[in-house]
Amino acid sequence: MNAPAAPATMPHVMNTYGRLPLALSHGRGCWVWDTQGRKYLDGLGGIAVNTLGHGHPKLVPALQEQVARLIHCSNYYEVPLQEQLASRLCEISGLAAAFFCNSGLEANEGALKIARKWGHDRGIERPEIIVYEKAFHGRSIATLSATGNPKVQQGFEPLVEGFVRVPLNDFAAVEQVARTNPNVAAVFLEVIQGEGGINATRTDYLRQLRRLCDDKGWLLMLDEVQCGLGRTGKWFAHQWAGIVPDVMPLAKGLGSGVPIGAIVVGEKARHVLGPGNHGTTFGGNPLAMRAGVETLRIMEEDGLLAHAAAVGEVLHGALKADLAGEKGVVEFRGQGLMVGIELDRPCGVLVQRAADAGLMISVTADRVVRLLPPLILSADEARQIAAILCPLIKAFLAEPRP
Image 1 (cartoon, rainbow, N blue to C red):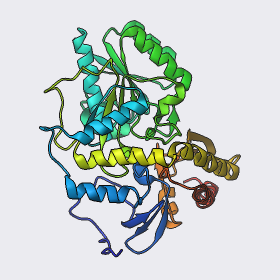
Image 2 (cartoon, helix red, strand yellow; image 1 turned 180 degrees about the vertical axis):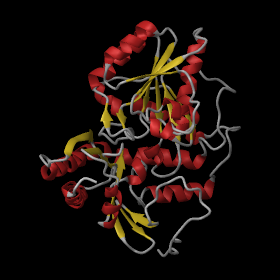
Image 3 (cartoon, rainbow, N blue to C red; image 1 turned 120 degrees about the horizontal axis):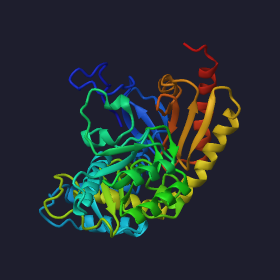
Image 4 (cartoon, one colour; image 1 turned 45 degrees about the horizontal axis):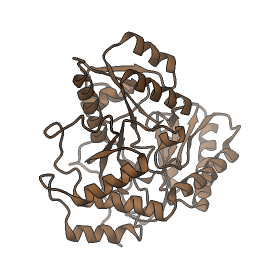
């Protein structure tokens, strides 16, 4: 499986990413190789996208068959695979209907439109949405405005109005908004904040929000783009709290690498949008739908929810065994195969150092080492991640601060 060597620079590609100086060629399972033949253990999974790893023997032939059959046909016509995937998503979520798009950003943008339309339908002239500190929902102007990161907002002002921001897990702050703001139409949050540093929403807080939204007639909108689709050991992270949202954006792992997004809604929000209110050219195309159908089927056949929970325990345990008590390690966070290790200083240099050692990771929120490996990760591979990563973190923490 040969590939041409990557050019030293990419002069005609817009400079919007802080790329590492390597280019990937191919992958198998939880391993990838670059164009120079170097091998890496994939602890990032394309940022929680490659649910089934690389070159999965059940997924690849299904996608090949679909490419030969039909890739795109437009939403002027019925797409049977949309109904098939929507039906399965509703079955595993307890929700009622789905709209398909191409990314998490688009799914979140659609959720914001649903919330505004919901408010307008109830006589609220300027609907507002409660959002959260350290949240990340995307980089369009609207999702950027809902995001709680001033760094990614800078330079794109004026931001979109209509958002009320509160701290995560502070129910008194939401109650205060409820008492003083009659324009609120929805609450919008990640069950586990991914880009914000693997910050989990408490189960009791989610239950409190569910009750408050019911009392106030608000929509509870849970962004499961990064933490959903089996990553925590259940289909969706909010299921640990035993609640059901009104609106649930999905993307990332739903297509195991094929671009896909979805907004799954309950009966409360099912008829908010009608013909002409929302749409997409590429969303719901047969190739993406087949990828989603096959991903969910393989996850169920191979028991990947229980597997993610079990291997996640191995990974958490191995990391804690080597790093617990290490000066400079602030906290271990996450659930299943969504892992964050907060350090007491910015640690972005670890991304390159880990790659040099044959491991792919990311650093988010400046100080949090983040792991989002494929859900097929084995217990032995989880221990290999810890064996590579922990010495790098220790050596980094032992260096003098700049």
